[in-house]
Amino acid sequence: MALDKILSIAGKPGLFKLITQTRTGFVAESLLDGKKVSVGLRNNVSVLSEIAIYTLEEELPLREVFQKIQVKEKGGKTAVGHKAEKIKLEEYFFEILPNYDEDRVYASDIKKIIQWYNLLTEKGITDFSSEDGGDDEDE
Image (cartoon, rainbow, N blue to C red; front, top):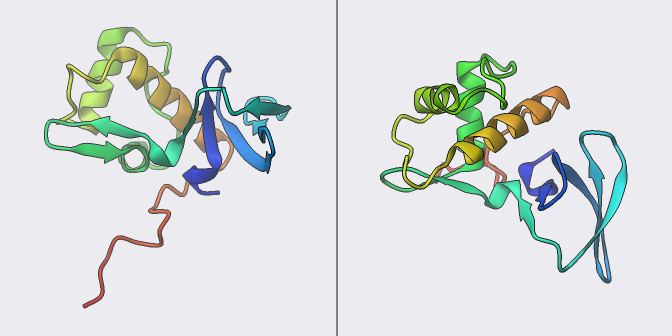
């Protein structure tokens, strides 16, 4: 399943899988407990494929950050849990993304990224390649 079907809903823990759209919003299923929730258009919802992380040069798509974690952890869960202390989280993230913008990426962001990566890995959602089928251009 591609990251464009995985959602983060403000005020609700974990991640959600988009099931279907309705007239007033959409229905999503929690990856934590499998419960379905109805989400209105007024809810603050982020699609994981649209999230990017600030680096000193550019914004890096979240899927690329997940790929870097996946390579470091050889496909397994992260060595650092999302509840680790701030310094441990920052040290771990610096290993993954040495050029991340420390002024604009907070410990709370790193916590979410680690938590989301571990949840996706646990649920077998591990294909973080590009949604558009590849970045290579044919000449």
